[in-house]
Amino acid sequence: MCGIVGVVGLRDATPLLFGALRRLEYRGYDSAGIATLVNGHIERRRAEGKLDNLGIVLERFALPGVTGIGHTRWATHGAPTEGNAHPHGTERVSVVHNGIIENHAELRAELEQAGQNFTTETDTETVAQMVDLHLKQGMTPSQAAHACLKRLHGAYALAMIFAGHPELMIGARHGAPLAVGFGEDEMFLGSDSLALAPLTRRIAYLRDGDWAVLSRHGAEFFDLDGTPAPFEIKTSALPGGAIGKDGYRHYMEKELHEHPLVIGQTLQRMIDPATRRVVLPELPFDLATIPRITMTACGSAFYAGLIGRSWLESEARIPVDADVASELRYREPPLARGGLGLLISQSGETADTLAALRSLREAGQHVLSVLNVAESTMARESDIVLDTIAGPEICVASTKAFTAQLSVLACLAIATGRARGTIDEAREEILVQALLDLPGRAAELFGLAPMIQQAAQIVAEARDVLYLGRGSHFPVALEGALKLKEISYIHAEAYAAGEMKHGPIALIDRNVPIVASAPSGRLFDKTASNLQEAQARGGRLLVFTDPDGAARMERIAECTIVLPETHAFAAPILHSIAVQMLAYEVALLKGTDVDQPRNLAKSVTVE
Ligand code: G6P
Image 1 (cartoon, rainbow, N blue to C red):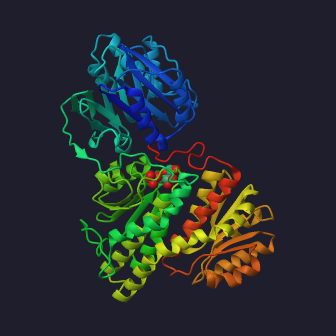
Image 2 (tube, rainbow, N blue to C red; image 1 turned 180 degrees about the vertical axis):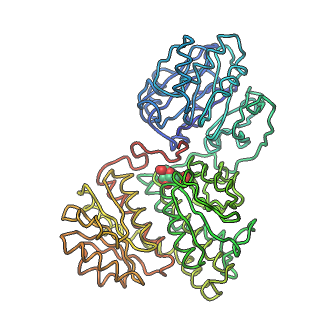
């Protein structure tokens, strides 16, 4: 997945495109490029690696022009080299693309046969070469683009400019998002409204399969048959200003410190301060009669969903099936109509989660999404959205959005339990109080930094790390291991503590530290026994626990990190923050690129 942007107007295009690419860099940073029309000809600048490299090229070789397109790439087809960097094209057309053209090999063979000369390994060049061929055959740019779009299979968001047409830009989408921005005497295309926020707040989202022809005065929208298509201009609420690090070393550090605020803001939306009861927005279905929930998501969002599952099952006594979206969408589980599809996503654009949403809807499920981007595709396609109020999350590895998701899921579990009669008023009061205490407890966690840094020294020296947890703390272990892998490049595996003896125990020696999330409570003794088994085999234990658990752990653990006392219901939220903090400290010791780790992207809009 990649970020794309385009402008047709009167102002110098390059600075506008570059600024928008900065806001899209979370979508990929393998290479970047910009093409503009200069005296009717297409000119482009491209650079391998991060956007800063393109900035250096642009300083040396300025790129004038008032119409242009830009791209920041997360490589799918073809190595992340300058040669494969977008925009792609010929002397007649220049194209930027987000997605994958699945029938590119077949189209490429056909186009080569027709005499088109390819210069890259990318699937995107197929689009440029096909449009080029149609232009040579005498079609207008609109006719050429339309004829090309009808041949494409797969996912795409596209922006194109054409030599000799200084006031023309064409955009198209199928399966990948694309927004059209309406300015004064200028028009824009962008992968999302965040990219366009400083340029215009007036946004129309292309419907799936539609395409648009833009001049600086406005846009015409069409469907794939070429029939004019409806569109609606909405006012985006996103902040237009740049998002800074506010004195923190990394966005991740800043976002970790925003946990208390974000949890507080998210809970405020769902808990009535007067009655201290959970109040959800009006739902288009009845939580009391939903027979079962199918929860799906990707990455960290899926782990948040697993914690949500344990709350929904234990507090609301409702069966919850959970699977990662890339599996669920092809698994075709038999689902009785009238069930609830529960989707969780920070971006609301993740391709697998979006596809799973659509397949759940086809299977007759209601669709409830927990989302951080209110203007996302998933938001538009859900029956109801529960918002996480995390604000823009810039670091590729998710932190504050994860705990905001947990805050929403905890409230959903309470509301579901109440609707189904499994939670009475007294129980609700206890659970709500546990949640309301969280912002304060989360703030206390930062005082643990010296202990966490000590643990980080041990982890940073390891090649492999094992994370363990039980019950709702097994997903905490999964989140901790994922975060460590993502930002420190140390191999980490998470296991349900009770499963360790069925294999991973063979790995244990002094070189494989074991990080455990083990609060006191019902499962503490079981987890403690598992940890004892590891310690007996030379394992070095780094244990996150609470004051009650600490006494027993201190005897066996090399490092015991004592989190503030909290109710068991809310403990996974605190422990998640702690394991994220550990990953951050390890990444600092390893000197990695914390905010933009290699090979990753924040919003994965390809399968
Ligand atoms: C990517 C990101 C993860 C994120 C996952 C799901 O892999 O690097 O941090 O958890 O996508 O993204 P979503 O936007 O759907 O939450």
